[in-house]
Image (spheres, one colour):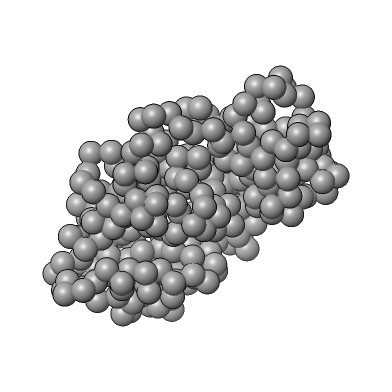
Length: 297
């Protein structure tokens, strides 16, 4: 593991979904089972187009009888707008009071035990007037928190967490092959199962219908996945997102986010077989892809 650290994720924000119909409202829209969300459980989910393409991903936690969606701050207004299109006569309110919270992470040695959390994806406990929960995707990512804005990271510092600017967390999630919203998933183009949503507990196969469910299910049961998002070690200058990944003179994929010699790339699975372990290239850099331990491809 690593030294304990905490960080505010300034590029994340909370959207509140409240009202008597909040369960039924979200249940018919998102990829995971909202009925599992409670004061002691958070989930990871996505909102898709009708054609099953990625629009938003977020974490859903419950505080005080309302859902708080931890989502991309720069795209929060778009998420609220898209959810609002489906509200109709549902007894649901969107957005009120979400700005009372900041989104934070706490990672490293004993991070979960210090927060009285088991190593169980999504397990949640009240913390400092907000909530702390094990990252529903992978416990190795530590805990995510919604903290009262006025208190900041002080409650975590009092437990012995050092404060980081977010770079350490970015390196951690890249090393584990975890995508970060629209930095790594192309809006209205990405397919959930190419990005590991199934293995990362972002899809519930037993729940009823939701927007985009038909294509997502067909992709799984017909084994239509031809590309996968995966971590790569970068030898050379970090290629900008969108840089083609090459195997010789053949295009094998496309770069996504990168930092400090680590990155994510969407790579054709047949190109990995053809490469036979030899490095791929992207711009002036050589890439060495690695299959994450949690992935099934």
